[in-house]
Image (tube, rainbow, N blue to C red):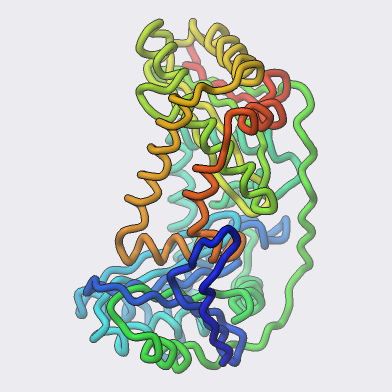
Length: 428
């Protein structure tokens, strides 16, 4: 195995964990901490972005099927092992990755880790379980489509990403799921769940060499990759003009206004972090500009917030408001006007310093536990490199008003964006 500690990073930021590449190509990140809980979080670059067009929903469906056992681990046995040893487990799938984690103690890792590894490497995906679990996923989609916020964001994503797979729902569409076959999922799994596509993060009170030995033993015997239909990811062009969609929903009591702009991905990480600052300036707290003016002072909205979602190929800047339908046009116009103000006038140092403190504090509070650290390292491993996970506070502190003004001009045009409006059907 090839082991190396990255003691230095650009701008003198130190990465506190140890990164190792095993002889089979698997990446292991380890950090020993005094907490008795040990988190193992396995991140795989096998999200919805890797799906061929006709296999939409495959990555999330596979997340379900991973837990249906192997030739050595029958369905339900893994959960039983975790519970019997006082641990917890869960998984999630996004466009860029799927990840699976367990929380246990160092003493129980020899019992729990091999089970998790066997599921990830040798998932059987039996035909009968495939059909039963597809019904579970279809029910998950039906329940999600009862949520107006899910429907609104789904429609907004489709407006923003008209070529890139980010515009497809991670859950998939029912018609696609009904056409999927078990052998296709086995091909998808065996192709993507390979060591060079996977990172195992271990954080907790366990020594480095003991960790590497256990991971090396557990993650052995990867399946031969059979290959599957080629996936072409097309770059998404900039939004030209205003893309608009209005949804009329029954039983909706309050309207939603959802606006979105496309920002940079991990190749321009500092720009993406700058948008993070701008999102808090506009709508990240009670003292933010849009919240203070539109909710507290003018009472045009019940709630309004801004958010930046960082993805590998782009970030998505959104402004979402909950409001009465008669205020929709006025609020949308005011948001555009306030973006123009952000472009034309630099942020005052006092306001910027407050936002920087808030973001850096949030970062500190979200990287305290073993599970938080493992998630942080694994997330950046999946979309960029793990080392940049610790650079966030320094980037935030280094941003200055003129730079943020330029970023607002570059990415947050009041004339080029996507907007989805949800209205009560009776008032449309």
